[in-house]
Length: 232
Image (cartoon, rainbow, N blue to C red):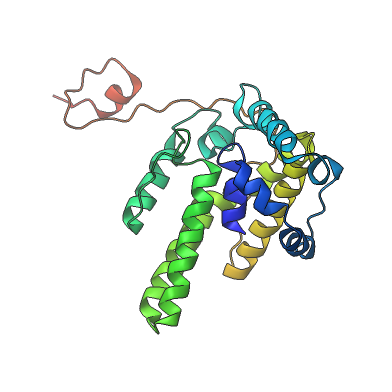
């Protein structure tokens, strides 16, 4: 499910992805999960659906004024802020690295974060199969930390926003699945996390904090310098 959602939000859905999704067995499995696509996804020729979803992705998820699926943008109103650097460190610590797909992506983009969670779940499952309980506990701890510090803070509200804003049933249903899956996973892990996103349509831009570099001389000309300036 996490990989399925990553395919919807990481970039424009590819033809192969949509073709696999529209297979009768896939639609039946998704219906069991509660997804009910409208005729706009089920009936047109695949080429038309691909074009329509590419336009919807561009206007809803990629264009200025839309709803970018990026943690920094959703929580701070800016790209490449603290969440961006935190998830990069989380990936590095877990032994993962983000590689470029068809397009460049931010490390704190929704699709990347979902793939990271999926990889951790695979790792935990493999450890359980091998009887390595220590590795399983370690991986579950990483999962919990990532949900508390990142996904749990923004995906539920973001999913509600996308479900309201989209004009296509594909993104409406995918957003609904994202919200429900996030709530289920938080409950499974026994976590209570505040929804800091809140589904806001407009996210105020936070102040950009300039970090103090102890290796540079302090001039005392700015707030950080005055706080750290030596006293003679």
